Image (cartoon, rainbow, N blue to C red):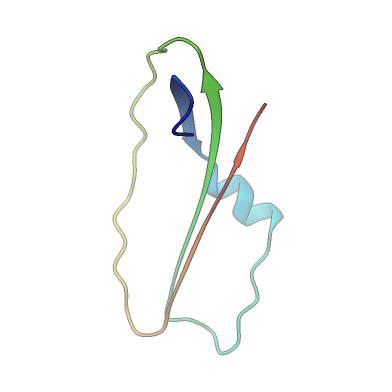
Length: 71
């Protein structure tokens, strides 16, 4: 990403959660799954700022962070 002039970044967490089920034992008290999709761009594009919710860790917490490049 750092070598790209621009990157278009979106978070597709809902789509990812529906297609990649998670099974953890013992069951976590809190789960945060983030899936980022990005595409290298040669030019700047104006995009709407995403609405991101806050997250509070409680007890046994699982954080999953992943992503993929679209070419």
